Length: 562
Image (tube, rainbow, N blue to C red):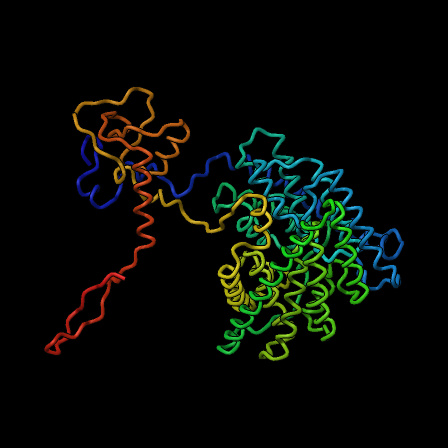
C-alpha cells in the first residue's frame, strides 16, 4: 500500500478494498448496546411467561363458566357440554362481549394477533397502548372460552408483544430497539404456551423482525429461552404432543408422497386464506357497525358446535388424537368441513383469536385422509407432515412450521419429510397468492410487506465504483464536512447522506488526507443500483456445449446470450 493510503491500481480494478479498510469493516453492525437490550429482553421473557399462564387459566375459567357453570381454571373441551340447543347462544354471548370490548375499549383487540403486532411495528413505531396488553388476553379468553374455534398463540403473541413494548417504552430506546423487545415478548409468550423456544424465535424472525441480525436475534433468543424455562415451573415440561418416533428414512416413495402432501396442503392453505377474506369482505358490505360482526360470527360458531361439538374451542386434545392415530373418519371430516367453515367465518368477522392451533388441527385432518391412501410409516405420520405443511403454506413461515412441528412432538426423525412438504406448500402459496393470511389484513390497511430478506446490495458496491472523478488537484474538503471514502461500501455513504439531509458528498482519499478526488450523488447511487438490477435480470450462458463444425470436428461453441 502506498503512503497516502490510496488504492493501488490492482485493488481498484479487482474491486477489493484496501487492507486498512478491511480492518474497519465488520460482518455485523452489533455494538455493546446489545447487552442492555438483552437484559431487558430477559425481563420481557419472564413477564411473557406469566402472561401466557394467565391467558391459559383465563381460557380454562371462561370455558368452565360458559359451558359447565362452574368456577375452575383447568382446560376442558366444550364438546362435553349438555346444553342442547342453548349451545348456539353461548358463542353469540361471548362474541357480543368481545364486540363491546373492542368498541368501547380498543379496536386493536380485534383479529388474530400477528397482523396487529405487525401494525404496531409498521405504523406506531413499535409502541403498543397499555390497555391493549390487558384487554387482548381477556377478550381472547372470552372468545375462545365461549366456543370460538381459535388458538391461544395469536393472542399471546400480541399480548406478549404488548408487554414487551410497554417495558421498552419506560426506557430511552430507539424504534428498532422497541421492535426487538416487542418481538421478544411475542416469542416469549409463544415459547411459554407451546414449550417451543426455537420455533418461537424463528417466528419472530420470519414474521415480525424483518431482519436477521445479531442485535435483534440474540435478545429475542434470550427472551424465548427465559420464557421456556419459566414454563417448567408454571405449566410443566413439553413437548406438548409427544409422539413415538417415526422411521428415520422413508425411501423415495415416501419422499414423493411428501411432495404430494405439500401440494395438497398448499391448495388447502389457499382455500383457507381466501375463505377468511371473502368472509371479511362479506361483513364489510353489511349495513351494520363492526361491533356487531362478531355476534354474527358467534351465531355461525354456535350452529357449527351444535352439528359437530368437537369444533368448539381450542381443540388441543383433538390435535393429540390426530397425531396418535386415534381419530375416526367422522372426526376427520368434521374438522375439515365444520371447523374450517366456522373458523374462517368467525375470523373474518373480526373477533379475537389465533390461527396456529386451528391450522394444526385442519392440517392434521387433511393428513388423516391422506393416511388412507399413502404408504404407512406409523400412526400420526401423515397428520404431522400435513400439519407442518398447512402451517407453512398459510403463514408463509416454512422454517417456523418445520421446527414448531418437531418441538411439539419431540420427533426429530420427521425433519426431512416436514421440510420437503413445507417447502412445497410454501412455494405453492407464494406462486398462487399475492399475500398471506397475515399480510393481507395489513395490506388492506394500506401497507405492503415484503418478506424476501437479503443482504443490502449496496454492501457489495463500493463508493469508488459509483463516484465521479473531479478535475483540478489540490482541492480539500472543509473541516467537519461530511465526506465519503472510495473504499467504503456505498450503503455507508448513502446513510450518511440521509442522516444529514444531503444529496451529494465529496469523496476524499482517506480519513487522514482530505484531498477531494471525486463526488458522489444520489444519481450516482441510483446508477449503481441499476447495474445490480441488470445483474439480477440479465441471463447468459457462460459455458457452452461443444459445437460441431462443418467438417465434423468438435470445437467449443460460443456462449450465446439468452
